[in-house]
Amino acid sequence: MKVRAHMSMLFHLDKCIGCHTCSVACKNLWTDRKGAEYMWWNNVETRPGTGYPTGWEDQGRFQGGWVYQDGRLDLRLHSRAQALTRLFFNPALPSLDDYYEPFTFRYNDLFTSPEGDDQPTAIPVSMVTGEPMTPEAGPNWDDDLSGSPLYAKNDPNLEGLDPEVRAQLEETLGVVFQYLPRICNHCLNPACVAACPSGAIYKRAEDGVVLVNENKCKAWRMCVAACPYKKVYYNWATGKSEKCILCFPRLETGQAPACAHSCVGRIRYMGVLLYDADRIPEAAMVPDEELVEAQLSAILDPFDPEVIAAAKAEGLDEGWIKAAQNSPIYKFVKVWRLALPLHPEYRTLAMMFYVPPLSPVVATLEKALRTPRPDGALVRLDLPETDLDFEVFADLEKARLPIRYLANLFAAGNEALILPVLKKMLAVRILKRQESLEGRVTERALKVLEEAGLTLEEAEAIYRLTTLPTVEERFVLPPYHREMAAEVWNDPLAHKGEVGFGYIQPPQRGE
Image (cartoon, rainbow, N blue to C red; front, side, top):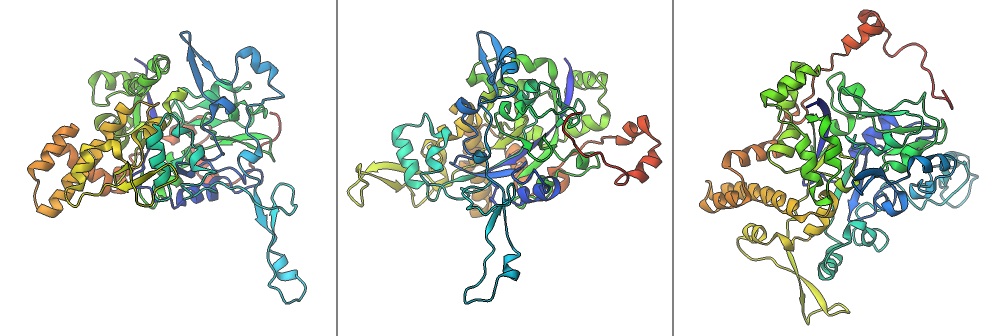
């Protein structure tokens, strides 16, 4: 058992309000310079939708992630021999049109336009060429446009849905959607690291953060193509690849990443997970329906004496082990089994986890005479006058966001993993609503908890950590002890005084 520590983040999608504050915080901190205009290390997508860059989940085109066949795990992008032939031409690379051509406005026209009867306007101009242009896309171009024939209907996660269920979803798409925030998943088995010919991308052993050494980067851009989540970007000005760094300078000083710290809905949690590095190959080489369970089996119990002893033997100190024991991520992922990785079928073993959204309303598709569609079908919202929560709990298959759709996003199509999560979330909602209405814990609420596989104590803990967490409970950060690393290179006091000053080497083409 080779115990390693990993900094992981959790996104509670039932609380996301789609405000994009996280995206703006990240943008202002890390990608506000030339060549990085189109980079959104953090972005928030409306789902169903095509995401950013457009259609990033279409691995038939982009060839990201891994493929398991004939007992072997291979990059989908290329073999070793093919990598040499594609160094100078890689058809799987996304183009700027798949993102958007960054633009600004010629604000000077507002002040220098000649006098006239019309109000002067600032026309949009390209930030790449400087020429006037008409914007046709953006990082959140489809924001809230659920139901659009250009976006929602082209979501690849709709594949496999029953035709009647898909027809029902299309009827209600105008008012039913969710938000999906995305950052780099800092995977345990990152395809970007495996595909890089120059070895510029690496995964830090101390906390699992995947970083780019820009001094080694040769601009082959294999990492951009190999990442199935398209979270590695190419800086066209410096000729270097860049990506989310999980705000590791903030983590090292005890601060949460900017996207998490600024989150208005408080949907983000941060903590340490202990995992067995020896189990990574076997966790990635199982059938699709077993991928989630295999990945979770590699995550270790931080209270197990054997795990603690092995962790100490690998150099983890008490601070990291204690942080793992108090980690909200461990509770959501392993204890309560409420959180799942995004697209586990890519076999990168993503270490950012999501609590799926809980649809509040059920609906049925029925044949009706009143206001029929051309095919004669009509969606009737099935809203019983009483006991709505219990009706939903008994028939989650009628949720307006289909179980199959959520399974395609978070469980490699395995619906058996999604239903228990939604039942637990709804059971907690029923418990607290019954307490509010009846002033006590009712027998019906207790029965629902039992059916969902929760105890009253677990339900109260889930409620507390979901709705009333303190900052210290949401972000459990370990002590990094960067002073020990600084002592290797410099006097700690001298290092402290020099931070933020002196010559900074700019990235250049070539080492």
